[in-house]
Length: 139
Image 1: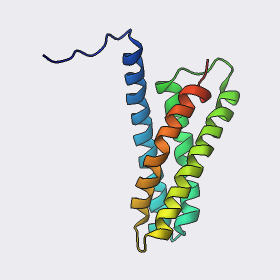
Image 2: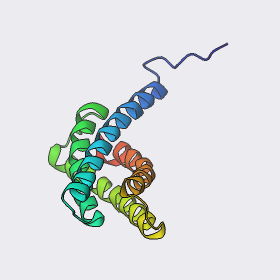
Image 3: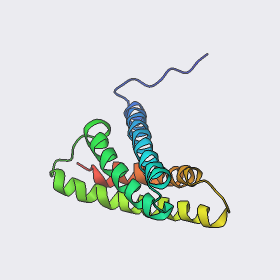
């Protein structure tokens, strides 16, 4: 016997739908992040540490727009306050992301920056989801 998914009105269904939309925003942000990182390092010769800062900032703006319009409803206290809360979560996640990314590059000789990007991004995802869900888009 297969287990049926919860009805759409069930809290688990709502959470699952939000996780799917968050994953879409994150995947889009990851593509933006990787494109900026690779463009700056491979094509423009920027060092991978400086390039990562620009890549994270660009991806953060893109994911904020997707998350506020698709994943969570816009908060009731306006875009400026919501943006500040979102930025604080992104900054926290970015510090974790960048620390793991940098640590991987420094500890693993010859590691391709894209692999370090994957490791750092994966680590920061949980922090981002919980921070957005419980803080940035609060009602």
